[in-house]
Length: 145
Figure (cartoon, rainbow, N blue to C red):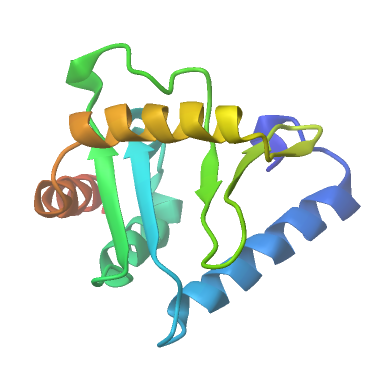
């Protein structure tokens, strides 16, 4: 959090708490589907003291929680402008969640949602398969421990 420019202690605590709650939700037997695509460069920034985070990425994967790695060798990709989260609900319209160092934003406009869904599709099709991504994360973990 501090590395992304968030320096206010209360804001750091609030954002960490939100991530810990998300972690609990994803650990439940009835957890929602979660499919993440992580840029290889982010995984290369993990230091030995954060190795448990890579192990967690390996441990949590199951049929409704998948992780793919977007390899650096592909060069520029469709989502280079930054991270985003697509939230899809069974009975409500989907939204796009964007987070910056200063703010959070929810995009609800159907045109914007379709644009981000298209971006996600491009990035997912370029990423390593789930199995190859697991192998990549395991290799990265072995390299730093």
